[in-house]
Each structure stands twice: as C-alpha cells, then as structure tokens.
Amino acid sequence: MSLQSELRALDADLLTTMPAWIAAAMFQADLALSGSGIFETAVKAGDQAPDFVLTEARGGVVQLSHAHAAGPVVLSFYRGGWCPYCNLELRALQAILPEFEAAGATLIAVSPQTPEESLKTVETNDLAFPVLSDMGSRVARSFGIAFDLPVALRPIFTSLGHALPDRNGDESWVLPLPATFVIDRGGSIAFAHTDVDHRNRLEPAAITATLSALARSKAA
Image (cartoon, rainbow, N blue to C red; front, side, top):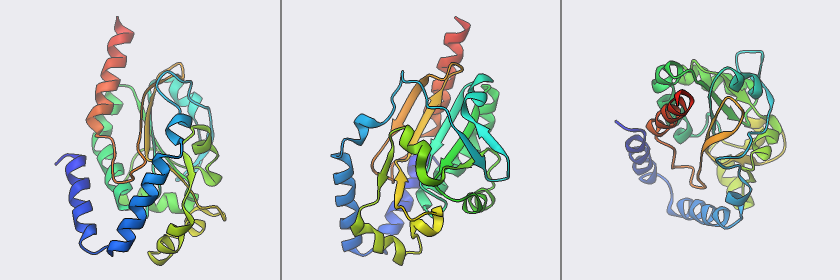
C-alpha cells in the first residue's frame, strides 16, 4: 500500500470519531496558514540549505553540512511522535531507507520534540536513521517553515494529550510544516516539498526519483 493510501485510510478512520467542530477548526486553521505567506518564506529548490547542529535521539549530534559532504541528504521535518500522520510517514521512510542508502544518501528526520520524546518516536516506529530534536524550532525557522499553532487549537491539542509545551520542552506552541528537502553535496536544495495540511505527505518514491536524477547529473 502506498503512503497516500495509508494516509487516506487513517484520515477516514479519524473522521469517524472526531467531533465536527474540531474538524472545522482544523480546516479553518489550515486555510489561515495557507494565506499567511509561509510558502513565500520557506526555502525552495535552488536555495542553499541552512546549516545546523542538532542532538540525535540516541545521543551525539548531527551537523547537516558534514552529512551532505558525504552524499545527498533527505531531510524530513515532522510535527512529533504524537501525530499519527507523522508516524505513518516515518515508517514509510524507514521502509525505503535501503534504497536511499543504495543511492549514497543519508536520511535525517527533525521535529521540535525533546530528545526524550524523539527517542520514544524512534523506538515506537523502529527507526534506523537519525532523528533530531530542534528544541525551540530554531532550525525550522531558518528553513522558513515554523509557525505558531493558532490559539483556538491549543485547548484541543491539550485535551487530546498533545500540549506542545509538554512535548517540546518550552512554552511556545510552534510547529514546523511537514516538509521534505533533498540536499545535494554542495548544500543546495535539489527538491523541496511543503504542505500546510498535515494530512498530506510526500510519497517516498518521489524522493528516490530525485536521488536518481542527482546521480545521473553527477555521472553526466
């Protein structure tokens, strides 16, 4: 089953139990975010990827520039391990990880969660790639994809057990757009995908196609 099929099945299942007023509030928040200009601030294909150093869930640190010096990097921003759509995406990325590695690419996932929450995400989804903690959303801001969760949604998130200050270790209510970037050896963004609707994610096959194109251009 494709990731898109899994996402739509999850969406249909959640909508059977979600109160209509919550679904409406989330829809309105997506509309407002779409009109906020965030797509204009987000980094795009052809831009230089901002460098960063972040803590990895299992310990140690990862620096982006060191990673892409060795080969292409697939950089995935996700909201948190509390998000079922994110977990589906992370598992889909894990399933295709051998293809990324065969292409010489490194897969890195980033969220604003604390290292402890990130480790839970790693263990729950049996992930074998670096999962980094961007506490304070400094890196997400540098990529232009950070936004404040609307005040109207905060009580809803809290009632569902997803109060962001508890998950992320600070008092902000900041999340990244779900986003995927493919970064080449020189640090340039070869492919960028962002979406204001957290239910939409990039199909992993699109990433492998980009990596194949990078390999062909290198060989030419």
